Length: 441
View: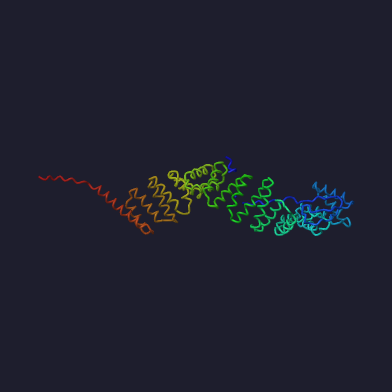
């Protein structure tokens, strides 16, 4: 089974190249808005003068070939021509703005493009309106999201059906300004418009939508977006993100199932991932499976031989009742631990194996190291290990010392009484049997 068909770093939506409006060298015409805005007035569009047509044609060729140096020479020649009309000036500014943009000189781009917006007379309406969007793109590239939004919204007013990319630009600008409520509908619309034309939305768009939901702590709606990322752009990071959302939704069983499936397919390879899976299995009482995965992690060299890993491994073995196997990792982790808790656990495991002398030594070490959750209970365990070795006087003294700990007096006194009774019983058994030889006649 392919688990990709079963989360954020956010990748921002990349802006496309600036829309360059090609120059038309035809005569003056009556023109309407090229976006179909029937409500706009018909305007007279100026044309390029006959004497400059060849220069503009050469300029276009150099520009399209990426030869900005030659294009700039021709631009300077055209700009020096006396009495340029508005459309000639606009085309000069458009070329210069694009050349500046290609050189990452965004202030220069803005200066040139805004010249076009300042002189609308005689320009094709579609060309003029498009400059609002172009300026918005430049501001976005400069990370000036407030101005980017302002110009994009002016452009939106001129459009009947803006494309998906425009909605994404506006949505992302709102996102960067941390206005997630405003970002959400724009991003959703942009993605939906792509879907409606039968295209797969861009990976970055899904990431942006997922990030908006995360910022709003809306994990329920974030989940299907991540599932789409897994479907269309199958990557490990998105499977892990889905698992993380299940954790936020307190559906740890589903989170565990994803991790287990990834492990079974050889996708989980890092130490942190193995530890996470093992911890999930422990929380669901799958102790033996957790222990097996941790053991393999040590054998493969994925898990470092350090306290937290030994502790988890020994815990998994102990809870699996694999007491014998638990001893070695418990000893290692107990030595490394800053407190005596693991020594106490080691002692309990040794007691389960009837290795009383070793258990006594481990519990003593734990009590000496200190910082226990319940010292009194550890003292009782020590007394039990001593009792099993028939160290009755030592055990009695140990249990007597446990009386001072909160909540231990009843159990400790019972043990003292039991030892006294046991010692008495043994003494009685050890007394010689006297057989009377007197015979009554």
